Image (cartoon, rainbow over all chains, first blue to last red; front, side, top):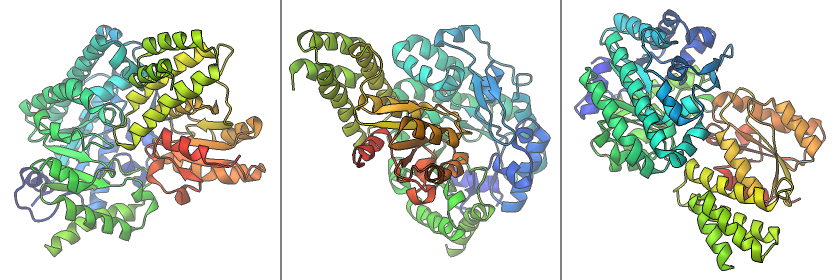
Length: 338
Length: 208
């Protein structure tokens, strides 16, 4: 089976030759290639080469055309600061109050900021890998983009103080995600990870997720599927257990679970939803490879079928390669025991 | 507890700044003692939020709303400046390389309303500056809040830098999404707090 077939088998709970495994390797690919992160994040060819080199090294099941969480907000006018070997951060937010979203226009993914870099990276990766492994792009979910446009503190207060303007901001953010996501699919990505850490129950109450975010996530996932995405993948970090049962109604097919979520309980909450996770990200920095293998086997025991072995969140830049390798090897080792 | 103070606590827990301010004014009209308002109003509200925290119904937005309402009441009750920091001074910062300061700001707010004097060194802060601030302000604890993993090696340096300055008695506490994945031993700190309230509990238990 190919990596893509394994992942689709997990989504559909059908038999597979082994558990699919996706270490969430983003900037770590640059670090192990000895490439400064600011080049990786601004040059599609460099990004694609680093992702391919990481794939060659670890032999996992997916690559990522993914830059950082600032691509959309930069395209909409936020000013970023780029450290030489770290992820950029927002120095000046695009808008100062939620109503100002009326002055923004949906950016053209072919032209705006670094959006074309991501599209080109997706195109290069798909051209090279075809359907052998999953080529994943990435869009920010509505809540996270709202925070990235306005600043997290102002966005969260706006949810309470200016609910109508905040909803317009969420609608705009969802529109941006639809347009950017569809462009990524056109460029060659099999799917776009919808990355929405600010929608976590650690940040906003589950009721706010249900009332304000779930409908917009559903609209986004529907739009991605209409454009040909075979499956959708929602990535929310933190304690997602209270909102997991809402995911199927949001048209989500793969749900990321972080290290703090018990895989067995998550499985009980959504028996027919494919889960991915949930090895603690920092374990790839501070643990030994045998610890990673043991953690993987424990998770696999609890999660049952319909599971993609993965890190709970991003593999840190400074992760020990032998620990990342241990994650991939654990999936293969487990399969040989079946 | 006085009925007015109980009502104040309810409004604070609801995150309703306007109602909390109105109730605080009513309370102060009959009881001008700001200290009582602090202890039985603001601190009680934070204790209520802390209790909610332990039942896993915890999210930043609700704490922010309660914190904002509490700070509005405090600013009016103590117009001369900060709430009296009767429980000692702590230094807080998000270490260099990390600009995510929402967690730090919430922790500062909770600590302030619990009666600590908080010296905020901001975000993207060199650890040497945190140690300087601890020495200058005679802090009994230094708190590092980190969302991303590159700050881990910096946090590990804190205790050694404090020792070099003769500040071995200053406690080091870590928190935030990345740092709370680590053990205290791995970070070379005294404590890794699960959240702002857990941090308060730890600080309250320290000998001073």
